[in-house]
Length: 393
Image 1 (tube, helix red, strand yellow):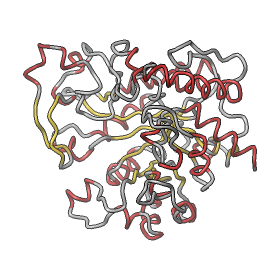
Image 2 (image 1 turned 90 degrees about the vertical axis):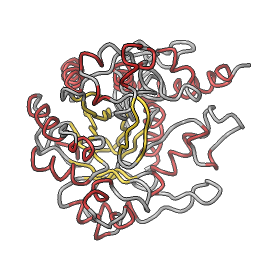
Image 3 (image 1 turned 120 degrees about the vertical axis):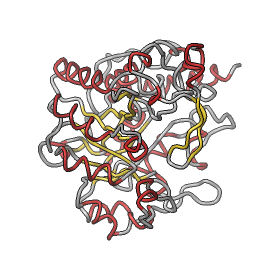
Image 4 (image 1 turned 90 degrees about the horizontal axis):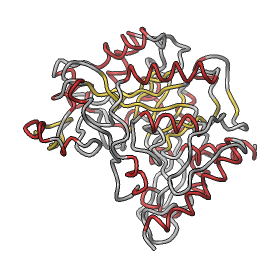
C-alpha cells in the first residue's frame, strides 16, 4: 500500500470520534480527503473562567494553528473555515506585509514553500537572498510584491512529504489579507450567533520596521476599523518579540501574548537592542512578572512545559504553569500535531513518520499540567482530548 493508504484509516478514525463526540452526530466526513465542512460547537465539557473577554473562553482553549493546517494548506480561508467548522475556539493568523503595506496571512515572508511563486516566470527576477532575524534565506519574499501581484499566486501545502493529502488542495485558495479574514470572522460570527476569536501574530516586527513596514500601527488600525481593539475584543495579539507586544499594548486594549522558544534563545529584538536576557530569564518568576506588566499571557514551546529527555521522551513538567499563573498570565503553548514525526518519542506508533501516533496520549500529558490552551494543527483531536480531560474532573 502507499503511504497515503496507510494513513487514511487512522485519520478517519480520529476524525470520526471527534465528530461524534465534539461536533455532534450530524458531522459528515468526505472519504479520502479528511473532514468535510460542517457547523460545530466547542467541546461541551470545557470549563470557562470569568466573564467577558479572553477569560470567558473554554479552558483548555483549542487554538487552530494556522487554521486546520493538519488538513488544509495553512493560512488559507479554507484552512480557517475548516478549523471553525471543526469547533476550534480560536483561529490563528500570522501577519507579514506586502511592498505596498498590506498585511497578509503567511507564516513567513518567504513564500517559496507556501505558494506557487516559483511557477511564475514573470517573478523569476524577484528571487533573492536575505538575512531575516540573522538567518540567511533564499527565495521570494512578500515585501518585494505589491498586493495586486501577490493575488496572482495560489497557496499550496508547506510540507507535502508529510501531509500528502493536503496537496490535493494546492492552488485552490489565494493568500488572504488580514482585512479579508476580519470580514470573514465578522460574517461567520453573525451567521453563528457568537464571536469568532482570532490569535494574531506579528512576524519579524523589528526586521519589517527597519524596512519602513512597521506592523503594529497597521495592525492596530485594522483592529480599530473592525472593532477588535478593546480589552474584551475577541482577539489575542502575539509575537516572539516582547517590544512588539509592548507597542501594541499602547495602541490597543486587546490582550497580548509573548511567544517563547527554546530556553537558550534570545528574542530578536533583544539581539538588536543588546538586551542580554534569554528565554530562560523570561520564564523565571521575575521574568514572568515583567511580561505581566504589559501582556496577559505567554505562548511557550511545549518543551518549556514538559521537557524531553535525550531519547525524545517526555520528562517531568517544569514549574512554568504554576509560576505563570502566579503572575496572572494564561499559557497557550505551541504546537501539537498528530503525526509521529512531531510527537514525543514515547507516543509514536509504528515506523512511518507520517502516520498518526498516540496523539490523545500526548495531549493528555500536556493538558494535565494545567495549561490554559494549546495550539494544534488538528483542532478536532485537541477538542476531543480537552473534553476527555474535563470529563475526568
